[in-house]
Length: 198
Image (cartoon, rainbow, N blue to C red; front, side, top):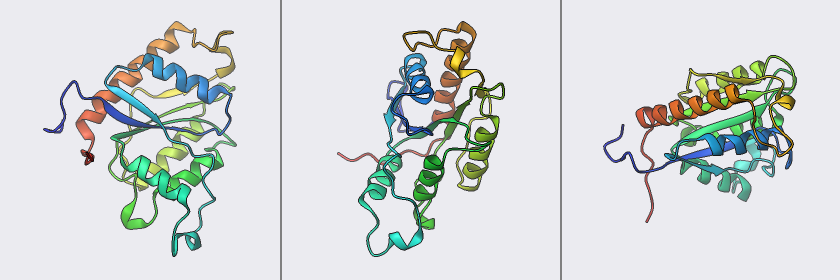
């Protein structure tokens, strides 16, 4: 744990949602995770849906304002939590675009060194396994330490919420709570302190 961090100080976590849908399973799961998280985790929604498609020519002379905003928001966070569906055995295009934007320019990647965790899901039985591991592959390259256990692959996502959009399965709730508690400890052990501005 950093000597500058106290047990009472909340850890700021960038919440990055793979789906751009305003209403859907991704946001329902993210809401459940907020409910089940320990009080030491403070989530910040980081919007990715409005980011222009990455290509190097847009970097010069001035990158798009949406890119600058996104990079600044992520850079200010202690850690990263990705909540994503699986599209065609991989991650959604909006999330891949955000990964590419945050990794550039090469010498100023906002991802480097930030502890992360991934929760994936799908309506099928595999729970977004392909998306989860495709994202891990990119994060390993970007020098992002990723929580290994417990893993979150939620299959049959359409059966896990009640009519009020609450996560009702007791075993799944326990898994998510354990995942987030372990993540909080993981952040404290691995994070590089972020310089705070007055």
